[in-house]
Image 1 (spheres, rainbow, N blue to C red):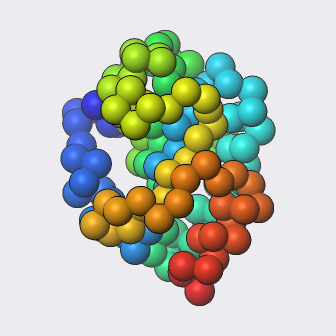
Image 2: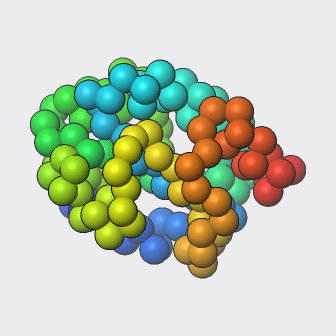
Image 3: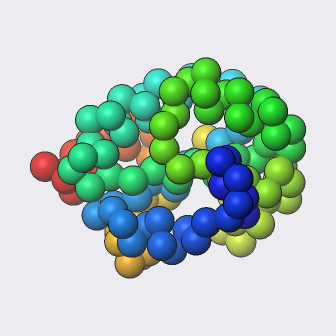
Length: 130
């Protein structure tokens, strides 16, 4: 998948840089995703220096809409997409059928929890990084 800044990245390498990583499946056209974005920004700002990484995987098809949403919402973490919408390779592989959807993994990529949002996600992250 392509990195928002151009080129490609290794998700595994990115995950290995952090104690825990939230993999956030979302899209610019998804109202609930956009409502969730400020919570994700707060979470990232609060815990990124304590070992939290976030990888946003967009189910957008329109590259400009994707990039504009990331910039507008100040989502300053790693973003990737193959611009295939619901046919996104990672979403297909993991059986993602609704968004927003999060998966939290450790530095080895093992899944710690999935499906948390908002306060539940913040509480889980805090419990792992305090």
